[in-house]
Amino acid sequence: MICLTTSERTLTAALKQVERNKEYIDMVELRLDLLEEGELVSAQIFPRLCALPTIATFRRICDGGASKLNDKTRISILRDIVLKGDFSYVDIEDDVKKSDLKVKDAETDVRHDFESELRAKGIRIIRSYHDFEKVPAELFGKITKLAKKGDIPKVAVTPNNIVDVVTIFRIQQELKDVKEKIVVAMGDYGVCTRILYKKIGSMLTFASENQTAPGQLTPKDLKLLYRADMVNSRTNVYGIIGNPVLQTASPKIHNPGFDSIHYNAIYVPFLVDKVRTFFKLAELIQIHGFSVTVPHKRDVLPYLGKISREVKQIGACNTVTRIQGMWKGINTDYYGFLAPIETEIAEEKIKTALVIGAGGASRAVVWALKNHHVKVTVVNRTKEKAIHLAEETMSSWDTLENVKKYEGKVDLVVQTTVIGMGETMGQSPVPDFEFTGKEFVYDLIYKPDYTEFLKKASAAGCSTYNGKRMLLEQGKLQFEAFTGYHYPHWIKPEF
Image (cartoon, rainbow, N blue to C red; front, side, top):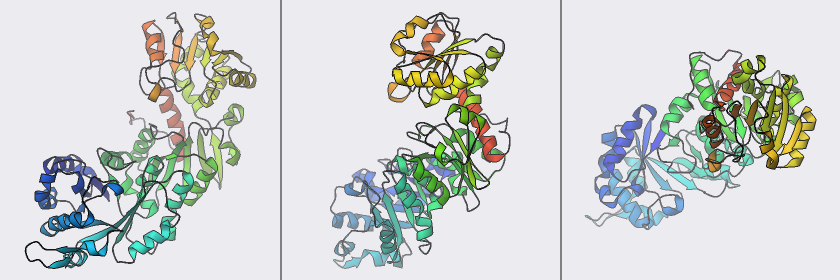
C-alpha cells in the first residue's frame, strides 16, 4: 500500500491534499500534530470524508512530530478523536508508559484502557519506534519485540551508509514470521528502501507532497514513475549507483520504458558510498543490472568478470549487467556523447576540440573524440589530472588558467565538470572565455537546460548542445543491455 501522510494545518486542506492524490494512494495517515489546535475538535470526521483507510498519528517532537503536549494529555486527545471516528489504525509510540494509556473519561471519571478500547473496536495499533540518527544494532530484535504484543510493529530508522541499507533489506529474510510490519528508512540512503518497500517486507510505504519525513517521495512518483506497489517476487530490479545520485533523471527513462513493453522490472536510485558493499546488496536482492555515475565509474572495475572494448580503453564503466553468473561492464556514455555531433564529425566540421575537466565524465568524451580523429586538448584546474588523461589518450593538455589562449582556435568546446548545476548553478568553469560564434559548444549538464556556459556560447551565435540528448541516447543503450529490447520509440521521457 502507498500511504499519503498529510502535511496541512487544516482538515479542509488535508482533504484537498487527499483528493489531489487519490488515484495514487491506498490509505492516509492523518497527522494530528500538524493540525491547528482548533481543528482537533472535528478531526474524527476525517476518515468518513476521505473514504480511505486512515491512520491517526499524533507525533511528539522527539519522534519527528510537532506535538509539545505531555504523553498523558496527548493520548487523551488522541482517544477522544479516534473512538468517535472511523479510523482503521492508530500509531502509538513504543515507549509510551502504560499509565499514560489509562485515560480518565472527563464525563464519568472512569479510567479506560485505551489499547483495550481500540482492540474492542477493531482498530489496529501500530507500535512505532523512531531513530533519526542511525540503524540500531538490535533492529531485528526491536521489531520482534514490538510484534509480540500482537500489534503492527513500525520502525523508522536512519541508514548512514550502504552497510545500513543492506541490514534493512535483510529484514525480509530474517523476520519472515512477522507477517505484518512497517519498515521505514529515512534520509537519502533510505530512498531506495521506500521504493522497494515490498522487498524489505513492509506492508506499506509513506509518501507526502511536502516531505514530512526525510527521504519521502511523492505519491505520484511512487505510483506512476516507479510503480512501487506493483513490485512482486518476479520483478527484476535495476538501478543507478552514485554519490550523489538522487537528482538523477535516469528513472524517467527506464521505468516508462519497462512499463511500455510490459516488462516486470523497476529502476531505482541507490546512494552508494562503498562499491564493494553495494555488490553484496546486489546479490542479496538479486539486482539484474545497474547504471554507474560519479564517483564510481572506475571503482566498479575490480568486481567485473567481463568488460567491453570501450571500458578497457576508457578505463571507466557506466553500465553493469548480470551475464551468465558474472557481472559485465560496458560504457554507453561513449556513444551517447557522440550522438548529437556525429554528423558534424563525419562532415569534418569538427576537427579540433577543447575538453574542460579531467574527471570521470571526461574520459569517455576524450576517447570518443580521439577515436574519431579529432585533435583534443584537455584543460583542468589540477595539472596532474590533465596530464594523466592526456597521456592515456595521446592528447594535449593545459591548465584552466590558460584557457583563453584557445579562443577561436578550436571547433568544439566540451564542458564536462559539474560547475553550472546544483549549488554552482549560474556559474561557469571558464567565465572569461570568449566564443567567436563559430564553435560547437557542448555541456554535459542536462539540468538546467541552459547553463551559464551555454548561455554565453548561444549569445555569441554558437551551435549549442546540453546533456539531455547524451543522457537519453546512453540510457537507450543501457535499456537494450538490461532487457534485450530496443527502447520504445514512442516514449518521450521528460526531464
